[in-house]
Image (cartoon, rainbow, N blue to C red):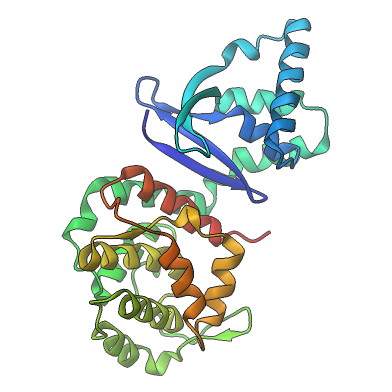
Length: 291
């Protein structure tokens, strides 16, 4: 029961645990209730779920009996049993919460996995578990193309291909297409023996933005591979706030100090910890979500 996934609904975590025995995901009921009610207060969410369970039992609703107890990691780092339901149970739960927010949540819950991001995220999980990353050469352009090709193969016809068009995003002009291949060659040769050198290389790759889409998700995996190879460290992305990260990356085109500080504070030596890398995928895709 050590395969944990995090989805984000309007910036609220919805954690899930994979059951090998039953071959399906089980979702945290408290996370779902908090997300539906947009309630960040854990105590209030817990009290609401306690009230709702009592109400459902009195009504003879069998939904509560479908709840399993599985372990999730709490803020103190320890794992505790918590109420969990499978996807069918969560859908039924959303339908008995009497507000319109529950309907919006249910639409997201049912269809988010079918989006390009949802399908690509599943590919990212498989990539981490497959062992293919161990055969790649960190820091190279080929490695980045291999990652991008795996994440977006079958979803974008340009998966793994260096763009030939100039692109903008949120008012930012990335490297012009006519200079891109030359710049990528220069970036590939940048040193990567120290933390600062590695982050500088990462920042320059972000400025280059070699693909039409999917740059951030691919490059964050690429960055972790460099850290793992050169420093025997990786990033615990769950420790980096989304807004802080996006702002730091926006500023990094002229001043990389903010992104260096964020990354430095989130470094860990748990390079073989499966949950660290899985959470990294979850947060990486979360950074790309628009409100």
